[in-house]
Amino acid sequence: MSLIGHFIAGEVVTDAPRTLPVYNPATGESNKTVAVADSATVERAIEVAQAAFPAWRNTPPMKRARVMYRFKELLEANADKIVAMITDEHGKVLDDARGELMRGIEVVEYACGAPELLKGEHSKNAGPAIDAWSEFQPLGVVAGITPFNFPAMVPLWMYPMALVCGNTFILKPSERDPSAPLFIAQLLKEAGLPDGVFNVVNGDKEAVDTLLSDPRIEAVSFVGSTPVAESVYRTACNHGKRCQALGGAKNHAIVMPDADADDAADALMGAAYGSAGERCMAISVVVAVGEDTADTIVEKLKSRIAGLKVGPGTDASHDMGPLITQAHQQRVASYIDRCESEGAELVCDGRQYSVPGHEGGYFLGASLFDRVKPGMSIYEDEIFGPALCVVRVDSLQEGMKLIDDHEYGNGTCIFTRDGEAARFFTDNIKVGMVGVNVPLPVPVASQSFGGWKRSLFGDLSIYGPDAVRFYTRRKTITQRWPSSGLREGAAFSFPSSK
Ligand code: NAD
Image (cartoon, rainbow, N blue to C red; front, side, top):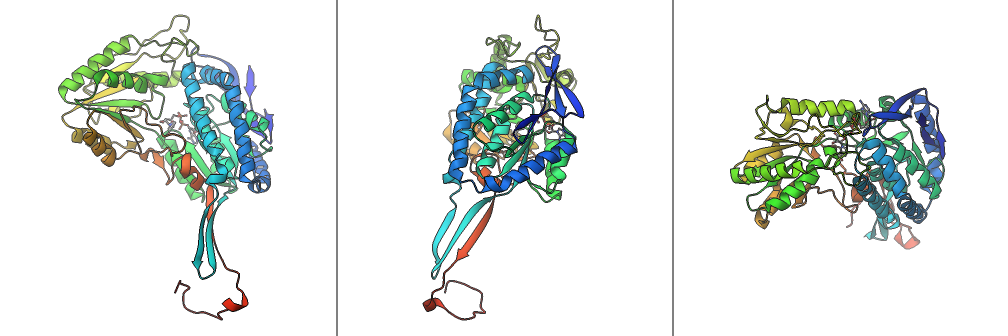
């Protein structure tokens, strides 16, 4: 058994009053445990991050960016190792793990523009001989709490931007796949980041609760399920902290009658079943406009599902790996159990999927539910597994109303050849990230990522330009240097430019 520790003050620390097992979901076996931080360990990390803040705050943005340049090179040089760690503990196929790492590296690349991003805003002659400008000042110690499904990418959505803005950072990664974030922390040190500027504490609710209540933590970025996101947001706000908390999703794809059905079916296969459906941007509902469109898309999906290769992520021929835990595998299976009793049609049944030689692995095949309706739990809940619903509607407007009425508003897309329909959709739909013939519309690093409704609590999205706003505090300075000719005496009216 090896023990995965914390990273505090530039050292791996293995203090562990409690530990939790870390599984390989492709085998169901565990030969690692992860240290679970108690309040004392978290408080030590906060103390270290607070002590490192003054020097890091005063480090020129260009020098902070140079650390990111070296960090990017180290991430690329160690990509095979990181990807293997992700697949070992998460289960996703190696190519998919590489994709998540590359999307994380893109945020590091964007963070390299820190000198440009932080140069502020200036108004020369805002008044007579008066100049005014706004600066973006760092907040202090900030924390990030991340989910299991992207153990490298989601932390990388947060700390490269927080660090180049001059903050120090404490990451609390998912306890289910903690190796990659811990390894990456050591690369930051190798890239030249001063000790204490970036720290990792592994753990669960106890560690999170300590971060949320400690007055030395200025801001919290959270990504995870909606119930936890909402509770983290409320608690952080009650403690006077700035918070952005990204939650769950139920992403719908509209397929219009004029769409290329083969292209749409191919795109939907990857978007629904890639990473075993454990993506916050996964498509989990197909909204087919018209009965003919629905019949065609269901047939095309059915034949593609028959050819889907499910097995350990380490085998490059596989399309989809296992679910994260046995409990989650059983939860997803319980929705398949309910499909027919709720009145939907079970077109493909992914239960009892066994991979020879990996009988202990948490595998499910792909499931497809047709004639799904609002009100059914398979429609309302985020299943977060390889299960795709098909809802049949008569018009684009009816499909859009379904999407608007759903509690989540993370991502959505439309497959069509009609520009007018696409424009109407992008203009009016109540969802934060929208694709047109793009099934996973994950914004690039120079845009910001965030959903609407109960998919995001807070005002600012993650990474991109919003991250500069989130991880800094604006200070506006109005200045003049009076010379003898400018002296005006006391003025009692409110200052204005006369
Ligand atoms: P989760 O909510 O169970 O856990 C997320 C983090 O919160 C983990 O670090 C975990 O240790 C911690 N945590 C769990 N329960 C807690 C509690 N009661 N109090 C305090 N902290 C707690 O989520 P998960 O299962 O790891 O990840 C899957 C979820 O994340 C899905 O709902 C998915 O949609 C969502 N997600 C959303 C986005 C997005 O950008 N909106 C991205 C990725 C994942």
